[in-house]
Image (cartoon, rainbow, N blue to C red; front, side, top):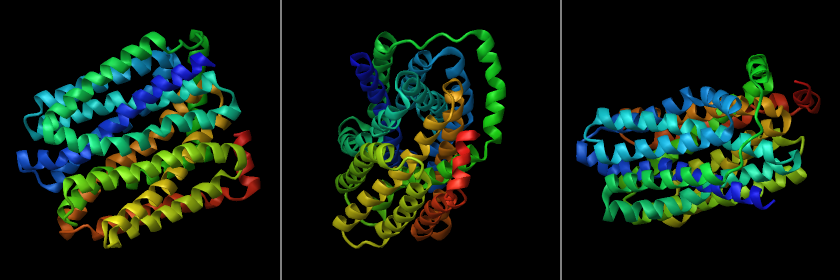
Length: 398
């Protein structure tokens, strides 16, 4: 139990760095845009190309996980993340270099979610997996609670270059800790690894997996769209100071943290077999709250609706993300989570670029919040075919 607790702690630290990297970029776009005189759609490409690489390498990273073990992929993932964060900070002297280094950083990120999920499945029984994974996913809440405050401080004192350089060094340290202290997985034979190819092909034909892929895609559009553009919107459109914008985003991050932990426990204990209803209602409520963030007139109501919007959004995400961990065999877990997370990262690719173009075309943010609200509702409505107990029961036989 002590070894498993240490493993979860170290993987949690790594996840915090992964999410801080995604969070800080939203604040860093402000000084980057001023330094290089970039238009909104150009800034969108810096974030969007990161998620394109993240998406393209999700499934290959899942295969590497199942082939070589989660420990090696965890260490390599954080090492690549750290290396290209350093390059972004020290060598990012133009738009082309900034996009290139963020694209390469996305490759590093791609291996982390599937390897964490693989390690949870390999070390915890079915009843404990949802809560264990939700602890790891709650790192997003910690990163978005602490990250904005740290980002504002670091941007003011060491600039965006120093912020990413420091993040890169921290990633190297955590990668070393994981390499030395996370237990190695059981060794699979070459034959069994080869035989997994057929199982991967079966995943692509599984209707439940495909629906969850689409749901995760939709959920992550508002997740990463707000992460990339909310600080800029609050400062430029609402007239908030950067400090106040950091506090607003931090309050939203607190909602993510609370929801990650509570959803894992509640769904694991009380909502087994009723996960589609959790995703449906949480997505609809989150969409309402996202729109109310835009229509609110004060800092306090913006904080309130962002807090509850993120609670419902994370409830949908955690339930979607952990469902395959309870229904699919361990030997294809890396590939399954890689496939599912590909949907999420494709959403992260689409969101900042689409929002950048919408802002440029409409000269405002009203169209972007309509877009985010509708996509969040679609993520819930996609679960309607699975609400029937008879159809959803088929997932166990698939």
